[in-house]
Image (cartoon, rainbow, N blue to C red; front, top):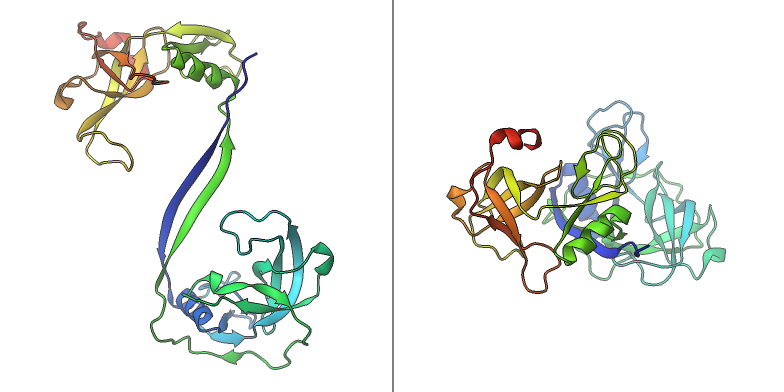
Length: 315
């Protein structure tokens, strides 16, 4: 049996958001080495602060300053730090209830090993050398021998010079993707310039790309069927917005194409014809580039357009 394909993939994008008055004060405060919380309707202090009471949904604006020391309420050891995490050496993820707060803040604890971490241990903030108004202004927590502060948290106006009003978070997801048995066979066949689908043993529909199971009947599909290579445009759109890292002249056409013998339309780019002459029913064929593992685009075959009744179920 051929080896099932797999490959590392990365999805990343910058996420930009504006901040309300509470979050703005909290992040700006971190830049100034000040930790702020907010009082809820029943008098509890939440750190990090939120803008609405989680119980009553009342708007919250009563900010207070809490201490930069606190107590670990729970923890988990991280033996292999990943890209973008607070520390480059093994550390503990901890929930810390800062002195004066009633809720816990999640961050990293710099500790030599899991034996050095306990629930109830005292810790304090280690501030970053350069602070910009972000949660990373807390570089991490570190062990601390002092007792908890006895005083109540002091009210704070939340006013700072040059307040932070928005943040850009770099979201990133690293993972290994496997298309599975059915699509591995489909991808390998494309590299040989063949298009292979799978037929449902119950309803007899041929799915391209194959899914490994019939979405209608719920049974496994193992009977492979070669389809195409030509097909029919069932519907299409004209693309006028340039995609990043895609060097295709605008405008261009992206279409759903029902390959001959398939009961499911796949999508592909249409070229070799002016974009405003692409139409439903247009007969097309795949075009491979030198060394390409899949069709670069589809072009007209020169055949008469297909009758609508022959592909209307696939629109």
